[in-house]
Image 1 (cartoon, rainbow, N blue to C red):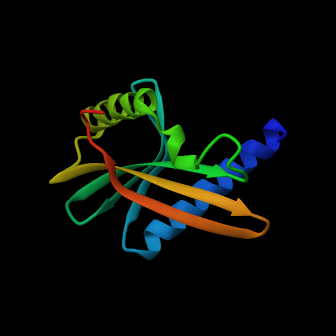
Image 2: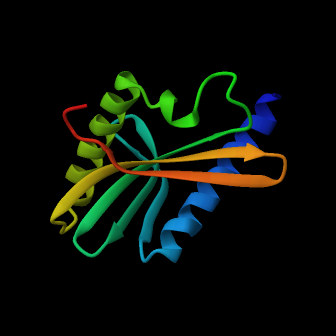
Length: 123
């Protein structure tokens, strides 16, 4: 896949994930948030819960399932970024969680897998 096509697919996946969350009562605070040298796809809040959401979109399973790419190294990076974001923004929140939204695109059909609380700050 051409790098421009890959970027466009990723942006579309993030836009669809944001819309999905908003339909479920989440307020997307930031898209492509940067903190601590880390980019986080979505930061969303609902009630007293704040979620850092990693979005993965793939057209094939050749490299595995989309969610499998959120490996321990990626999780540690996201936790580091989330901690920096929390220090910078100091939101009033009761709970912080890490979600993964995985899209599998087959033809024109988009299939969603939402992994709530996919991992914790311990990695």
